[in-house]
Structure formats: structure tokens, C-alpha cells
Length: 95
Length: 479
View 1 (cartoon, rainbow over the protein chains, first blue to last red):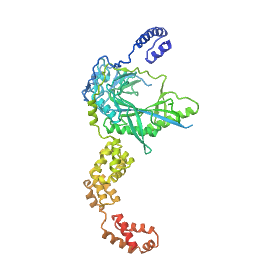
View 2: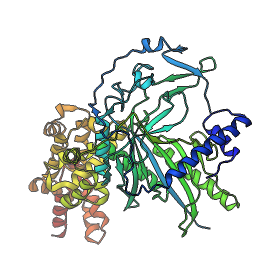
View 3: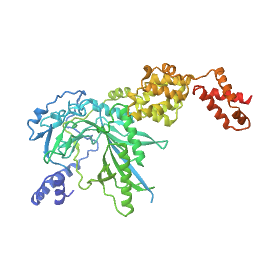
View 4: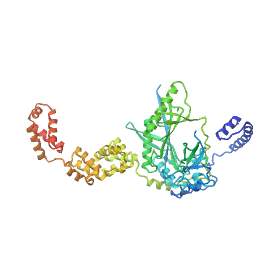
């Protein structure tokens, strides 16, 4: 697979990363290296290997459906930059 | 050209657990902002999610009730996007191996049944709420809802009209409440629909480009939004245009859909298995245990009502619209097994009508099943007429005389006159006083008969048994 500078810019755009032309070229070289690595790995026959979803072969522990948390809003909001009427305030984000 | 509308639905059902899907914070609705948002919901550094067994169990319950495959292992994935009401920067959802795979829902449409296939149903966490008004140019964030468990139920594009989509959504809504996994409260957002709509020339197989309409929170809006969207797409295509794949919002005030975002600027969610959560193993014995605790499902009850009580498919469908209604019907019919149709008619007519009028649920019905059964028993044994029964029903509803049916009948003098000799006496009096009509009838004027019946009913204040009146009158006139 070959990437172009415009691919890199689009990926950066989707990931909300701002990059200039020089950085895009540099990133293109690095990303192409990673793609080459993936390509050599794809040459390995994995048809008999079950896909792994986690590095450890243990299963998820479940908790009972019980409310165990109490209201600690004051404590949590004491470290928030800005709060009002119990809400966390953030820069406006209307799409 | 003839167009065919193709619809698939994605429904988010909020699961009725006490605590959140990955934390021990409460999910109760309506608490003051951020009082039910703990360190996990706030995504403070170093915290780890622990999966709620109750949420998985509800997903299994759903899967079993639609005949789906339960995946084991089932895995959780991160869906990455940026929005301040999602503090982790990703939503924990499922991508590969959702808990529920496949399954079907049977809907009723125009008196016939249709099978809608499900693609999957997966567990995920809800996001918080953003409030955009009145914070000096800032947005306010309430994370109480963040981490509330959702089951996203995805259908195949099997529906062909807004009516089918509404029927499917209603059937699904009834089912999740029936099996007790979701309260179905649409005002509070416990049951939300997104519709995927496309159109294609009738007779062709290839699916057209689809648009997704988000967040339809009532059945009426679902219907109107689909109708509008299909018309919009057909107009574009007939004008030689092309549909752009996009996400649209329905504006109920203007009754139209409008672009929210297009495919081009759609997020790449970069799904990947969440390393904080291990694969979930759902053992055969757990599935068996959930299965044995499942209530009799709506479809099974419908079939049983038709087979056991001889009800029509329509009646059976109305009575199984909710588990509460079906349970009510069964409690009444248990006492009058031979009169199932009478029981059904009263519940679908008088009870449902009055409940709708007063906007109350059948679980809060002022007339309970034994009281209705007592009333219907008195119709069945001829003590009161159907007309008088309406009066008794009204008294029961209003709580008169301790809701004692026999006491109400006695107090209001509603007892039907079923004594032949008493009726004969009245008939004789009426005949004597209406010689002209008797002559008319004997001269072949059938109408005169009804007029005489009316006179007799009037003379008995409507208390004579109409069937007996008819028989006796006929006998006397033909003598």
C-alpha cells in the first residue's frame, strides 16, 4: 500500500492533529515504514490462528448490579477549572 | 417510476440496571447534575471499568427472546471520538462479537405477520449531556448519564414502509418491557430510534444510498421522519440527482429532516478491542439459567390465546400489547374460561377506552380483574343486561359501594327481569294499550314489532331480558 501526502493530511484532519507540509512529508516516510512492516507480517499464514482480543488468556470478572458509589461531586469539582450550577464548564462545542 | 422504500432501524434501549455498566454509580433518572458521576464516569486517570453482570444478563435475556445466538466470548471495543460529554475520548461499545447476534422479531402489518431480521444487539455505555445555553459562552456538562448501560439493537433493512417501521419499533418496545430489561420511557430517552432510509426502483435488488435519521423519540416522529425522508430522496432521484450518504436530524416543528453531517466529514471511529476489559465468557449454564427465568413471550401468548380461547389474531395481538394487559386478561378469563371473547371485548373496549381517556396504565386500573370478572359473571348468568353492565362498570370505576358488583346492581335496581310470567304480564299490558300497532304488525308491517319491543323495554325501565321479550312478544302476536 502506498500513501500520499494528501492521505496523511486527511488522516491528520480526522484525528484533529494540525500538521504543516514538512511534518506531513516526514510523517509520510514514517507511516510508509509502518505499512511496509505490516505488509511483511501479512505474508505469515494465520488462517489457523484464532484472533486474540486480549494479551492475557483470562476472562472478564463481573460485578453485581449494586450502587456502591456515593455523591462526591464537591470533591471532584474542587479540581475542575470551572463549574457552575453543578455542571462542569467547557469551551462551547455546538456543531 | 414506482419506488420502494427500504428501512433499517437502530434502537438504543436503556437497560434497567440500578448501577452503571462499568461503575457502581446510580442510574436513577432526574438527580441533580453530576451527583451520580463517579471517578470512572469522569474518566479520572488510573481508573478501570468493571463490567456489570446485570447489564450482560439483560442482553442475554433479549437475545434468547428473539431467538438469537449468544456469543461467547463477547468482547468490548473502544469507539473513538471527541466530545466533552464523553470524557474518556472514547465510548466503550462492542464491534466484533457482540453479545447478541442475529434473531428475529415478528410484526403485525395489515392483519398479516412479517418477520424482521436482526443483525445484532450490543452493549455500550451512554454519554453525558451537554447544555449549551446560558453559561457565558461556555457549555455545561452533566455526566450523570455517562456510563448508563444501553443495548443497541440493529435490524436488517427489512422494512418497506413507515408503517412497518413503526410496527417493528412498537413490537420491540413492548418486548423489552415485557422481559423487564428496559422501562421503555421515551420521554426520558430510555428508548431511542435511529432510522436508515433509502429508496430504489421497485423490482430491483441493489440498495440505494442511505441516509440515517438520528434520535427519533416518538413513534409518530419516526413515521413522519421516514415519510418525509423517502419523499425527499425520491424527488432528488426523479430530478436526475444523486443521494448523498449522510446523517440527518428530524425537526418535528417543521416536519422535515436536515443535514447533520455528511459521510465525507464522518468520524473514523478507530474501533479496537478495549485493553481494559477482558473477553466476557457467557457459560451455557448461565444462558440456561436466564432462559428458565424468562416469562412466556408475547408471540407464544398470542398463539395460545388463539388456540386456547378461540380469540382472533387481532384480539390476541391487542391483549398482548403489554405484559400488564395480558396478565390482566388472564386473571379475568381464569374465572370465566368459557367467556373469553366477552372478557377480551370488555378489556379492549371499556377498560382500554377509559384508561386512555384518563391517561393511566392498566397496572393502576381502578377496576381490578376479580371485580371485572364479577361484573361479567352477572352478564353471563342473565342477572343484568349488557347495557346495565355499563352503568355498573361506571360505578366500579368511580369506587362506589366498595366496588361490590352485586351491591351496585341492587342499589341501582339494575337487575334484569328474567321471569317469564312477569314479562308476559307486561307484554299483555302493552299489547292491550297499542291495538293499532298490533293490527299493523299482523297486516305485515315488521317495523311495528320493534316499536312494541321499545314500549315493553320502556315499561320495564330497560330491565327486561331483551331475548325473552322478543320471544314472548313473537309468541303472543302469532297466536
